[in-house]
Image 1 (cartoon, rainbow, N blue to C red):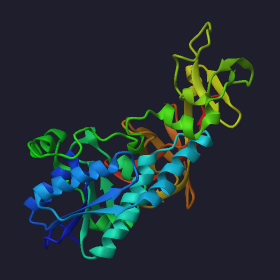
Image 2 (tube, rainbow, N blue to C red; image 1 turned 90 degrees about the vertical axis):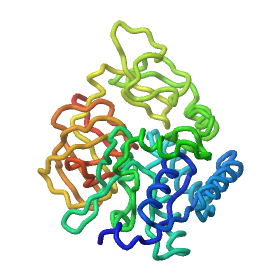
Image 3 (tube, rainbow, N blue to C red; image 1 turned 180 degrees about the vertical axis):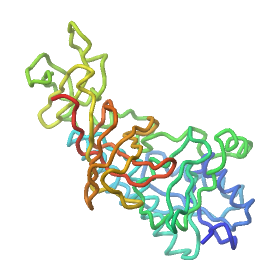
Length: 353
């Protein structure tokens, strides 16, 4: 079906920022009847922000309400994030929020109240119908593309979803909302629940054991120094290790349970392949498929060949070694400008042991 036909009513996920506000204006211009839902997540200062969002909705004459999603957000996003760091992973909360909260609980609330509405968001994303199946597609402004963060939503949901910003640049979006009393003037941040907190302070409260002193190891497991907390380090880091050496050393691994950080040469950061667990398949993959895979946001894609693609796993080999492939992050597989699969990285085979 062509969702732009019939001018069906649309409910939009509304944050009061420039993107969702511009999306409302665009939907109105297309003749849709628009209403707005805002997620109540239990974040600091939220009630005051909700008041600004409600005021903006009144100025725009858009029916608005807040949906209480505090419990699922805490369980599916906050606890997931903390548990990932406790396991020594680098989790991606935005992916989980889109998957379970925005395109899960919020969409369920929409269907309960307005079962015939389409659903819209202010993401910089597009979609394409190929062989009667819908796929996430790169938007016009690839600088702001957010389809990486949407790759784990249920593909079946996409048919009745609209992305009004698909054809706009960020400059056009800013111009469109100029003069409106936006509820949030700042650019969206990667981890919304940190607010003005920094990651280290947040984790120090929730994962204190990761900030205890421990051993620095070489790649052979030999102790070469001490550190003041494994979470002060990130894979790929060179400066700030606190260890003087006759060559450049990089953080190539960390084990929060053991309290150790492993240092090695840059070559030790390179991986020849990766494994992905519990993937979402947008279409069937087969061994031998040649695709592009992104192993983090805003990183160029890497050519890879599918080794295996089963119900609960994808294995892929890179055509050239890739630096700092990190368990817990999301691997997203692209065929040109559409997403065909995605899943959490569980393992990366190093080019040398």
